[in-house]
Length: 186
Length: 171
Image (cartoon, rainbow over the protein chains, first blue to last red):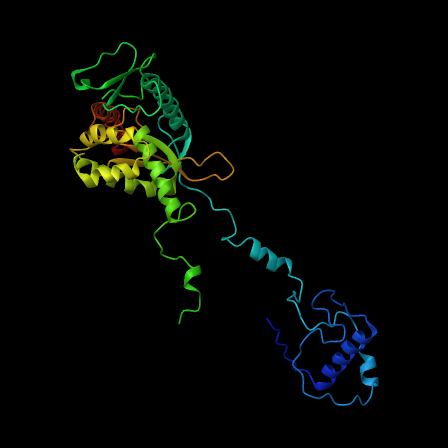
């Protein structure tokens, strides 16, 4: 993509700049690209300029300007002034940047641990998950191999429990422990 | 005049993009549906569980049509990658949910995943599963026997102490 450079400065500055560039080229100070694009005598940058350059009348005006390598045509954005501590504080302490306070934390009524209002209690869920895992191990033992999903409903019975008439036709999974208080028999 | 590119902004877009593409999204959801039908209670990222919920409920609606229905059998064949679950779907889940008109699944959020990504996780389960319940419905109200007895006791105490105070202030 070609870079369009707009010169709003007077013509003498443009002429001086181009002369300096050309002088550097002739002296071999500008970087020469080694490769298919190496043109040691061609212009390295295409710049919009008038068709002819007026003859250099005097060099005294240009000798005041210090020729510098930093006199590049491309410029980068840079801060103009140091941001004061007041401005910095305003930006850093703006409410949108502070960490929001959570007000939706409650105490779980079952176990007393903290929980968010719309989320399950972590402790109670871990309890249920462990018991579910034990039930699933028993079910796997009953199934025997892979891909043997039972084609009947399942019922879980604990120590000393007998199947009721509702549990007829269901597969029975025995768990060798007392029924936990939070697992109500339906 | 719209100054911003429509493709790069997604305000108000409701469809989720999961996985590597549309086909990958369907494969992901299909795996989740198969797992749900096999295990009846699974943990998954909340977005995937929410997306899968609709597909699972529609699959059960299809299963309710009966396994002689050609369309229902084709749907079950596509969505359940493990073919022994087709038997479970038609013989166990369809009769279980026959009396219910809809809403066969329950989606609950659980604490964020413990790994580095801290993903929002959910547990999705079919209602009527044999496992212990995740939430216990609390039935505490004014009308329970214990609360009524406590209320009566409190009123008795007040009546016993109250007459003494007005006599003191009136004089």
